[in-house]
Image 1 (spheres, chains in turn yellow, cyan):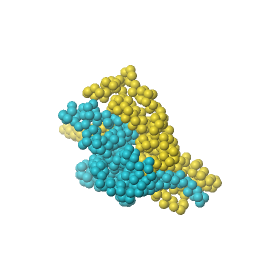
Image 2 (spheres, chains in turn green, yellow):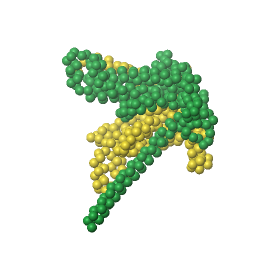
Image 3 (cartoon, one colour):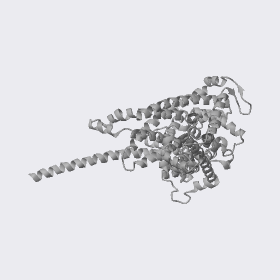
Image 4 (cartoon, helix red, strand yellow):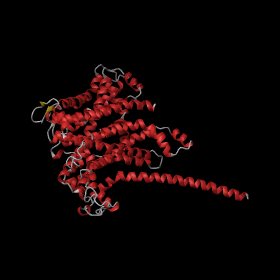
Length: 298
Length: 291
């Protein structure tokens, strides 16, 4: 009897555990089903983009469409990329984009860190006013300023140069200033006092203490500014007319106008322009997400 | 920290120059230009309220405004519902959840012109994968031409814009969800409240300040939408997908009507400014709430 009793209690206990595990499994597998459905919707356009670039011209327009491209691991698999890269100058456009986005981002680091340092650690008349001015002007839509800005650039003879793509971005770096001000405000005062005792000037404190200590925040700002400027569309479209000076975004735009339905080429160009940012994102995701969460793009 | 009297001004000088030369100055010029007839080649000619009167009487403007409202009416709820769902999904403690979080955010950092190309290809009437799926799996006999159709062009743009935008709003919702104390859910579970009840009685109310904040920034995004229109339809067919920001661009740089475009820009700024003002007022309450 006793043995019987104990076995039956054992089985119920095991059953209970079993059903709990089952419920857990069911719950989490349901969760994964939803996660994967959303993931597929998110990623599908990218997959379709890559797939189309690896198709031959005939396969692109064949029905039913296939996700697995016909040139996969075949000869001529990378043809679309080679053509876009060499014959349509996208190598040059990519380098241009790197230069413009890099220069604008480095510029933002300089101006935003200087202003952020002053706003965080110095007391001066009008500091509140200037800071409020800096932040409140960010709400002005680009559509408002772009017309006068365009005429200003024309006056300065800056049309068809990179200056209009770089200078406005790094001189009015409001979000960067805001972000670095927040970061600089957390630096312990003791560090500053020690430096003062050693006879450091204000500029030395900025350069030798605040800049090195804020490398993570600066990295974040650099990446955000780089992504922003890399993706910029309106200004390159307005300001750049020489083909050799095109950035990738304007490269795609003009390419679309000239080679409308050559999807493999068009999408190879799109992949080339998106890939550098995806690589940056994969390797520096923490910085990118953190920066965008606190400041937003644009 | 001790410092010279002019030192701080030197530190903020580049940024302040930028604010005046590239923000305040141009805004003042645009405000003035909105009262003039100005076609670039000829000097501006004072019109008083002429541009604003034209704007009110211009049928295209009202069409564009209606388009912008319709876009907003699809984009805002779309972004908010999907991003909240995503945030709740990636807020679960499951192995590999960080991967999904990172993936959902990916479209947000890519260039609109680039992803717009593949969406144009997906939406293509005859060989597009969307219409293939619709006709063959959902038995839609005569699927629309999407971007070339005057009814469907604008909703198609909104879908692409939603797809690209949701990752950002997801992040903000996620921060909000993580700010809700777990003890509340535990207490509710002990009282026997179902998951659905917990969602409507704990999650939604406690998330409401953040929800309103997201609502405002999403509305602003919707009103400023430009790149998706520029890259996918160019406002076509027949202005059916022209939105306000794109209409400003067209008037200024295609038609060369700087004065009229400036009046439109002022109108846009008024809407965005009002929305921002509300959100700033709200943000203060949001901070209090969090404490």
